[in-house]
Image (cartoon, rainbow, N blue to C red; front, side):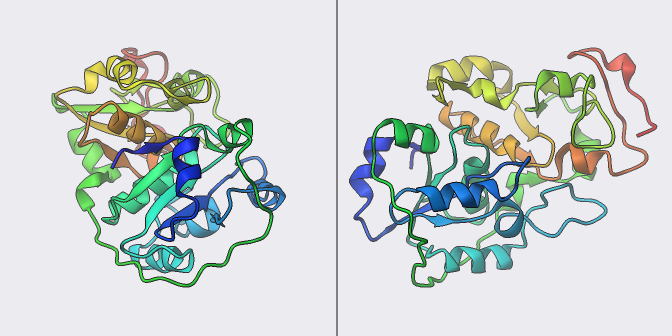
Length: 286
């Protein structure tokens, strides 16, 4: 199944009982904003899920700010959202596909391939004049069977062992100034994993939608023939980069789920600062 669906494609499927739309709009600056936006108007039939409450596990000393949920717990969340093993899921956020891609990745990590992201999100939906509703949707509970695919995710110890391997490409999808260590608004240490390259996730979009497959293949040309491992601040926006690689036809990438917030939670974490290649700034005092 193609990872993206456009507005017209979703409009045609709204009356299909096998389709479940998930609205996952979210703001790090105001964690209640997504729920308010859903209540103000959403895709007909969409169920709202919250990044912190529904799509992440408990925060602990290590594991990052948005740990992966326990597979069994997420299976119960999916079931309450009306997602069964045969459900075609379409995930919608405001438009940058950050949280929508998190859900796309989570479902595929647990063996559910029938999932797509609405290209352009709610911004594209509203611009097209597509229908909206305001009632909260409570679908019948379904049974979702998790089939975990551990090869899709790596942890810190794996990255410490393999980051320098010739066939591994570590990709940091955060904004360039965070990658260079000039600012860090969320985590206690600024910088990046030594040896990583910077491919900001927002640059995968043009005009609010994903770039063409050809453009994305060119953007990620260094990932061809390698095993890309993507990370961000907490493992959420990195999933948007994974979706972009899928659009480009570059498969087999992995997610460092804990990402930078996990990396710097260890006192011995090596840290690099400056642009790509400036690894002389690496230190061990994070």
